[in-house]
Image (cartoon, rainbow, N blue to C red):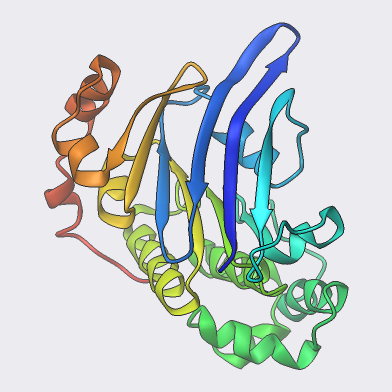
Amino acid sequence: MTTLEVRGLTKTFHKITAVDDVSFTLAPGRTVALVGESGSGKSTIARMIARLVRPTSGEIVLTGPDGEPVPRRGYRDHVQMIFQDPFASLNPFHTVEHHLARPLRLHGRSRSDVPRLLEKVSLTADFARRRPHELSGGQRQRVAIARALAPGAKVIIADEPVSMLDVSIRLGVLKLLARLQREENLAVLYITHDLATARHFSDEVLVMHRGRIVERGSSDDVLVRPQDPYTRRLAAAAPDPEARFRQGGQS
């Protein structure tokens, strides 16, 4: 079982503390939602876990299936990120097959796995020949999810993965992530400002405000019975989640 622990993570930019002493654990088969307004530090945490940004202090400890810490050189075999913007995260000059075959090759896997990856994200094999401009936003994000799975990653960092998609197709992509989490026994960090989706698609919710976690607990406990004043304000401002999820859609 691959587990990721964040311990006392802190990040300072030019004397401004963006992330302040944050700790949590990502465990197999569970989704942790990191919820907060823009500028609360959510995406900075995602980039530190993805090793795109170096922490000022604290540590990120990845434990592999053998129970031993994963060495730095093998980190990205286990941890991958799904970016917010599916229009910017795929190179428009390359086919879908290239986007999936490259991480397969870099991580010692066979490019013959491309059709299998497409099937996992509910796309047919003929999508391999297409380029990003030929796909809808939802289809592009499905390709990005398949790319994250290509190395065999068991820890997925999903940074606002549906915020730039049409409302009508967001639910389909979130349901796909939930299904993959169950089938692949993934540990998922779901970063969002949307309390409705956090409640429905996560096991645990962490609420961030000004770089700190101000409340944590099960999704119902935090979002239905919030204790912190900031969480209460977020919950009061959020749309009715039951109404949101009576509407659905597929991409």
